Image (cartoon, helix red, strand yellow):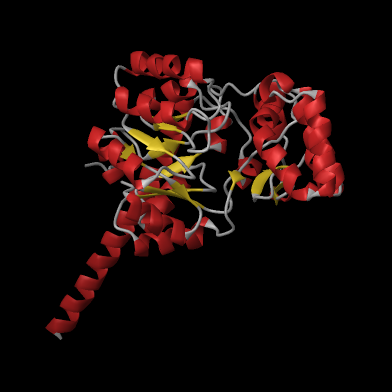
Length: 371
């Protein structure tokens, strides 16, 4: 086994312990294919692939890479969750990933079919619970990560989870380089997962206008956490849409949410009458709570504005803090080989340094014994 070989590479069937996470409207078949051919492991974003197209996307990847050694991401609250479960089992995909995960019975279905369960968690208690339910490995996402994220940094969360579980642990949140991979492996993780770094590649389907916005981020201060979208912690790049949401009161925020849903009624199904009725009911009840519900339902559309239509100021821009340190758009193959080369060099230096220290200590003991 090479210095980069771990239980993760063995179980997932990938050459390197580098995982491409499932990002809405970004992790399509092309990105998964590019990642897998380069030796990494990719997850399809099942939450934003239209149900009638999902099976076709899975088959595209299978045909292109000559097998089913890739993964599918989904959430149990999406309407076609059962379809995702059935397709992952039907095509014997290597793994599934999820946040708000399936119950123990569904996880057992995956295990019976040989599909590995790789949930993503942002807190120690969630990692422990996931293993109790049957997770085969865990991806921990530190607070540096993009999108929905916890508040615990990777440097604190990783050792906590490593001490608490025996399954392989994959580190996410703040990783983009070979040095990061080497540090994670040295700490005890068995791989790293990256979203923002894979999104910022030439194989990503993200429109040029949106990628330029990510490349223009000069410091981590503009990649911050907000709860204005749906009441939960989101790390994203600050833009005009987020500033409007945060400046609005409960009623104003609800109106923005409804107006956005109405504007994109083809996707959301919200008619003008439905919008007005919802607004009136919310004013009488709790406008802040109902605005969160509407915005949460509308979130895939908000993401679509930036990630599909190239309108970065009209949608949301999920991003890890690491975007501030990225200034190029390599291919997935170029990215992975750079990470592998740098990580291997770092680990070889660490091993050599340790060997030198061990040899020096032995010589000192030998000299002391001869006196």
